[in-house]
Amino acid sequence: MTVALDSSRAAYERARLSIGGGVGSGLRAAMQPHPLFVRAARGAHVWDLDGDRYVDYVMAWGPMVLGHSDPRIIEAVAEVLPRMQVVGTGHEMEHRAAEAVLAAVPHGERLLWSNTGTEAVQVALRLARAGTGRRRVLKFAKSYHGWHDTVYAAMDEASDSAGSAVDERAMSASRGQSPSVLDDLVVARFNDVAQVERILGEAVERDLAAVLVDPIMSNAGVEVPSPEFLATLRSMCDRHGVVLIFDEVIAGFRIARGGAAERFGVRPDLSVFGKAMAGGFTQSAVVGRADLIDQVTSGVTHAGTFNANPIALAAVEATMGALAEPGLYAALEAISATFHDRIGGILDAAPDGGSLRRIGSLLQYVPGSGATGLHGTGGRWGEILAGMLRRGHQFMPSGKVFLSTAHTSSDIESTALALEQLLGAPNP
Ligand code: PLP
Image 1: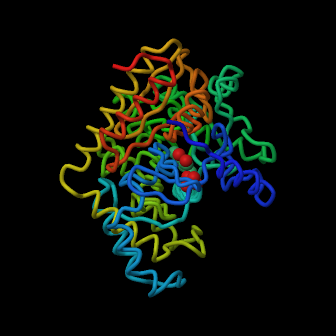
Image 2: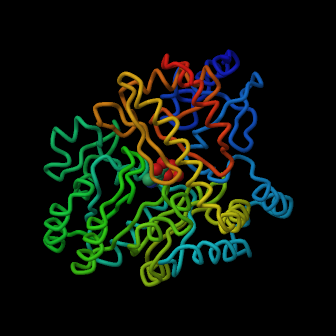
């Protein structure tokens, strides 16, 4: 069965006349054959403007770990919505939600609320610079930490081989980006223990304030950190007075309720959370050491009209409650393993089919060559993306796959049959 996509195509053409690029966020334009226009989303499914249903593996690019329109979140939001929207002063939801987040995160002493992951990363870096009196930040090649000038460095394979990861200099990733701020970055290779030992050993001379690491390289091929790598980051940061920041905007509350610190047993000084924290509402946070975070009372500016809005924080509190349900992460792991085995098996068997990497409920397609860029994957992914959308299964342009507690084995089986048909494999 294939879907027509007529209304989405027409809506996209119309949107391009009023919205730059026709999409609300630039990378969505990479969808093949064009972005889907959705009227409703519930559980593991979305419905387009024609009323056709899709199994959804985009899950809003990460937030919907409980599936779309989870009734517990909707109820919590509906209770607050008629009472207030934003108030620009204190309200109960902000400390109730903060207490719920801090209770879940092993190193959660204090937090700050922001709106997006990009914003929260900026706050975390400011806290690290203020706390150390140093300027520069060590990050890892191909890792994404938001679109802001100060962290957005070229991360594709070409720039790697041209030297960004090798000579440790960051290169601009966008036209219009200020080149001067890139000097604040030092770029290393993920999982390269010897390199980080050397760089962090020179932390004072290099003016290093922070290490900013996505512990699972969630936008660049999904990589398991070696235990030695994270332990080395922790011990070298301690020894040389550098602030260790985990960017858990994707990993947080997805790979474990306590995020990467719980999953890998290494506690950073600060973590940045977003996405899955708020069940689909706009919310991010910097969580960690009280002495660093309390600098906001001694000259470190953290501001935002929409910070700590009651609607999103009601969603955070409800999400934290739902994620505490016994057995939830085991069930999420089991459905994600089913997806990996079934869909990964089909890809493995197809000519040049590529493969899937997985950590918990996050997976990413890796082409046969093994090389993944940041926003594109190569291999047969473009063909799979467009072909599967036409068959009623929505995937991400980057080849990432987000599973949720709402996905079932029958969703996965229907996806498997469609993929077998697309790749020309015989049905079992
Ligand atoms: N950090 C990581 C690891 C991300 O994946 C993202 C977004 O995808 C961000 C930061 C930026 O978050 P936001 O899109 O909410 O600004």
